[in-house]
Length: 276
Picture (spheres, rainbow, N blue to C red):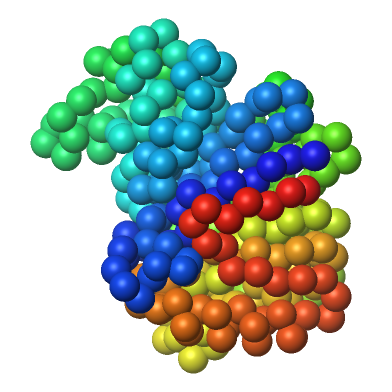
């Protein structure tokens, strides 16, 4: 069994305010705890600060899995408390690039003038890794990364342990490959197939998507179609548009739930805890 905690559910830019209290204003960050005590942090949006505060300072290694390096997915990394624990082992994984390694790309942000502390000056023991082409193990987790449709090098993740399966694709535009239908050619299908929980991009309404084709994000209808094709038991919509207030998101989630052939739909909210 895995415990899944949502620390950030918003996309594009943090949007705290009276209209985003229910679903939250922090950008994306999800924590997964395994039955053996292993901890994964998926993406490093502004929600990662609260994730770090909730982690015990017991010296356990922490693994941060980045889907890509757009600012809303890394802007909280410099405020992640374990990075400032002397000797704490922190592994950061991210998609490979043909031009620069992960350290060089992250250093663009974690260095002056954008940030006052450089990676080399952190008191923790930080290791940076390109995600491998084959599944790999972290504690009791088996992790699979695969490229998905989004501008720039971007991966989604499939995480398995003790018979439980989760897929995580917060920035994804599956429809660009053609109509969503069965078949392993579909972006994200292999990761999402038969999972217990699919955490997926649900940024746009149908009308918004018509004006944003190619921006790298999904309409909620497309997310539901992918969940149905992949036979995901539960779909959790994340990466809420910063302009979507709580009431609108609740209405969109309710409509998505009614449209699923099988399975359930929920809207990710900060502090939400799921079991898989």
